[in-house]
Length: 137
Image 1 (cartoon, rainbow, N blue to C red):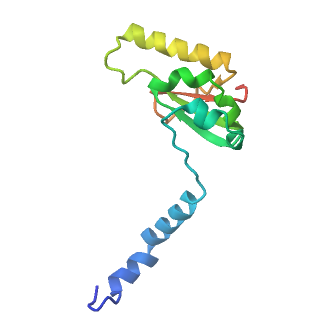
Image 2 (cartoon, rainbow, N blue to C red; image 1 turned 90 degrees about the horizontal axis):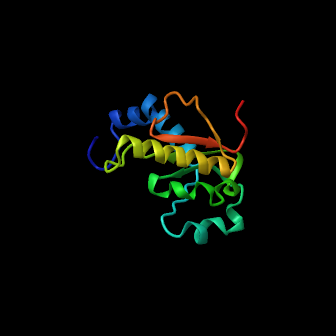
Image 3 (cartoon, rainbow, N blue to C red; image 1 turned 135 degrees about the vertical axis):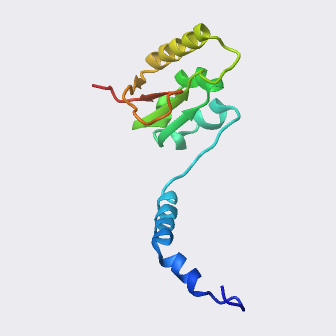
């Protein structure tokens, strides 16, 4: 940069160059997203509030919250929404049989809540179960 707070030739090039355009597009795209973080009393803070009904495109659950799969999250999801629930892969205190049992229990809870597994999720983390409200072919 040149002195006195003026932009130098390199600064102007960086803003209008490919990286600058890409950054502007990324910021514009990010502004279309709204993230709602909850780590407190899920039923009280989110599930019982009508403003959240049918408003989420993606809901994520950590493994320690997997029991919440059938607590009414389907009511929060848009019809085409996805629930990404982390499995027990990173629970180091569990052995392989316990991890398999955890996964089976997650599937059972998902079935009870009428979530449907998205099995073909190439490129997505293998330590999550991806579910949708829409029946899968």
